[in-house]
Amino acid sequence: MYSIANLIHDFSESSCWVQDLKAINEGLLFEPIGEGE
Image 1 (cartoon, rainbow, N blue to C red):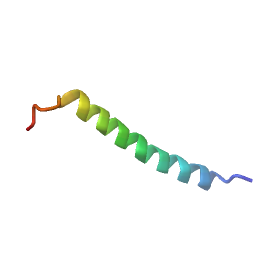
Image 2 (tube, rainbow, N blue to C red; image 1 turned 45 degrees about the horizontal axis):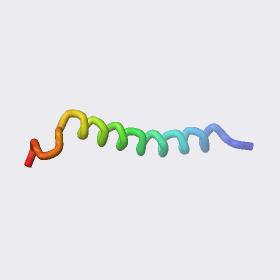
Image 3 (cartoon, rainbow, N blue to C red; image 1 turned 180 degrees about the vertical axis):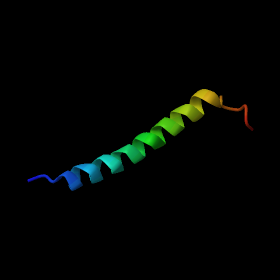
Image 4 (spheres, one colour; image 1 turned 120 degrees about the vertical axis):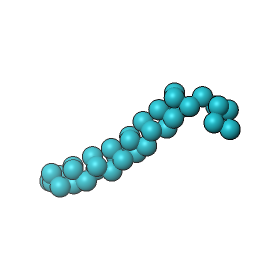
């Protein structure tokens, strides 16, 4: 049986990389390439 603890653990791990992707996407959107260099 799949426990709720496992579900929460998997969700928290997946949400970490989701947040990383969001941060990367925001960086690309709000910091055009070459502008900060």
